[in-house]
Image (cartoon, rainbow, N blue to C red; front, side, top):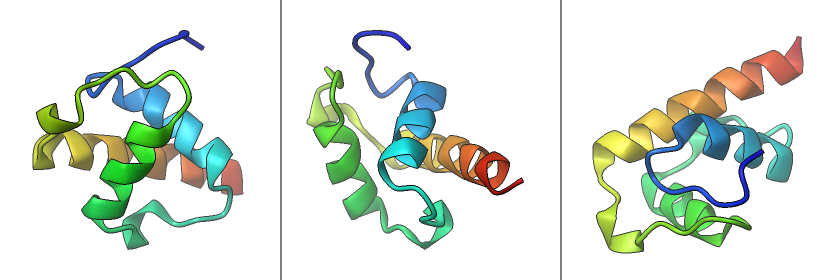
Length: 72
């Protein structure tokens, strides 16, 4: 895992979110909550103002892929 990451590291963020919130279905999470949780992750160095719907959606989809794999 990289030491630091930002909005463009959707896969890394997805991995960290599934570790922090095991069992939570990412498709049930509101983008406002997702934004807050991403900015609170250890190692996140991105500017909170630089997120957008596209970046949050990419993160949600990566998190969902990790979530599905954890259920197998």
